[in-house]
Length: 170
Image (tube, rainbow, N blue to C red; front, side, top):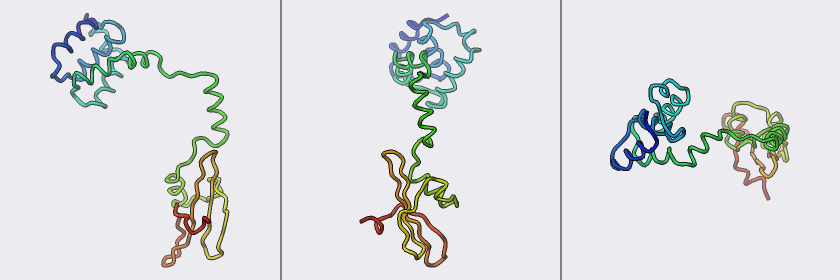
């Protein structure tokens, strides 16, 4: 059995060393629980999740500073609290979903339109049309407004979309 104090002494006595992710996982587990029985902890889902997350973020080895940051009181408290949900957050999420969810980005809108989506299905409205295959489309989503130019390529005749609307705006 190892205590948090044991691991803090190891870190203090070896400031320039690197620490394997499994030992770092032991240290973080001990920081969360005050101690670790390695034989029991290594089989737990919590320890495995800590080890997997460390390996994916840092690779095989961590610096002493990396381990200390992972053992910080803020990280330990966040791990203990988990995801915080409240009735107010749930209501705001439902209201946002009813409005169509997160605002669409210009990049996402352009990709969908270039792939053949109809602009009306993405809640765009045609604000102007020059009668020659060019049109100005707008999507209003709260404080965010997406303005796009739909035009026909002169050489290929293909319909193209662009966020360059300089010819349409006064």
